[in-house]
Amino acid sequence: MTDTKIKIENLSFFYGKKQAINDFSLDIPKNRIMSVFGPAKSGITTLLRSLNRLYELIPDTRAEGRILIDNEDIHAPSVSLTQLRRRVGMVFDVPTPLPMSIFDNMAYGPRLSGIKRRSELEGIVEQSLKMAALWEDVCDRLDTPAASLSGGQQQRLCMARVLALKPEVILLDRPCSGLDPISTAKIEESLQELKKQFTIVIAPHNIQQGGRISDRAVFMLSGNLIEEGTAEEIFANPTDKRTADYITGRFG
Ligand SMILES: Nc1ncnc2c1ncn2[C@@H]1O[C@H](COP(=O)(O)OP(=O)(O)OP(=O)(O)O)[C@@H](O)[C@H]1O
Ligand SMILES: [Mg+2]
Image (cartoon, rainbow, N blue to C red; front, top):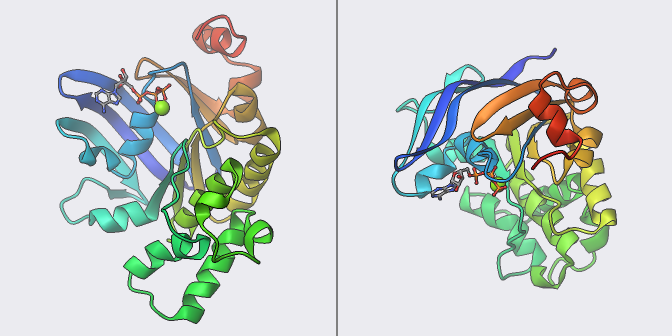
């Protein structure tokens, strides 16, 4: 085992009166890929959004319990939300590039954080696009609209935009949902590189993808943690019958 990057302790989450996560505890190791999977409405997106307090944009929501990142409580009054969301970046299932050029999409976050020098921005843009395995596709057309990219390229662009903010943790919520197998393979490949530098928490597109890319995995059902372990344990030898049934396609 490596160091723990994120420690979730007894997390419960509520949308109004509706409880979406029940007393959930989990250690997420540093520089590894942790998959969180389960049938629809298991609370996976809610869990991911809890890790950078993104749910606070939704009215009448409430989290109980503790989440520690590098041993620091993310709910502490001293925590800056801007800082937290920069440290813990999220990539959504549907890529949403801004209606501007590829370069400006990439430079948007760094510019907001105060970086103005063109050469510095160019460096960040190139490095982040390389990390997301998109540089070779776009290096000769950075000034064209991001909307002209294919779906898979747009998804990698959104990943690169998160990387440009130099996060520590990357949350990916089914990032390959709308993608063809080649784009999916590119993203999976870049994740194996990225985990050397970042901690990755991903809702995989399906069980096969979870098995291919994860170091550890957790199976969720109705807001509960059912089983957690190495990818081998969870995807090949689950001990809980509910995990086994889901993996073999008997429900969900
Ligand atoms: N904004 C919201 N307002 C109210 N209830 C919500 C909201 N978002 C999610 N929920 C509810 O919380 C529960 C968990 O939803 P969540 O989206 O976290 O699950 P999921 O595992 O990501 O499911 P999906 O398969 O849809 O991606 C569901 O019952 C859902 O209806
Ligand atoms: Mg979801």
